[in-house]
Image 1 (cartoon, rainbow, N blue to C red):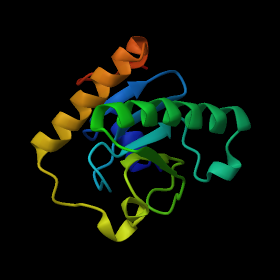
Image 2 (image 1 turned 60 degrees about the vertical axis):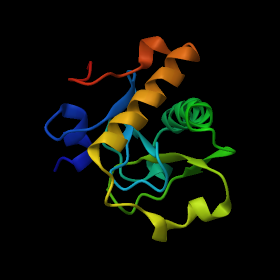
Image 3 (image 1 turned 90 degrees about the vertical axis):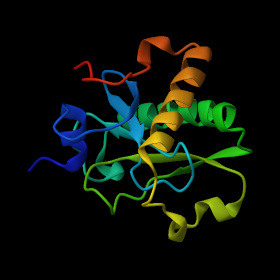
Image 4 (image 1 turned 30 degrees about the vertical axis):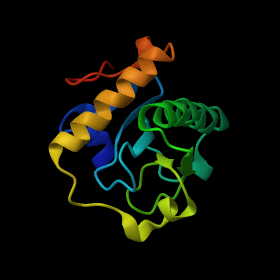
Length: 147
């Protein structure tokens, strides 16, 4: 059975993408901890990150690092947080989000009331920061993803 992330990647469900390459995509979390919270997701459906090939885990975390650097730049954050939990959706994903304190890691602060305009602004700011950092070829704009 296809995961919700596979449906987002295929375009069946909407997503605000900021990155796409041959192995992973990155899109904004619909339940962000902070503005710009992004998920790095393999195109291949793999449930647990501990079952993924090492090169895929390495690539996903490398992309998360690039996105984290863009988040620090775009949102003026002190740092970027990183987490692999995997309980929400049975499809490996790396959470990366702008953080200014340990309080920004508190999962009780997940937002479900984010206006579309805030999501659109966050995606735009991340895309700009990624382009400015030299990653133009991987920046995913609105519309269908390249395969």
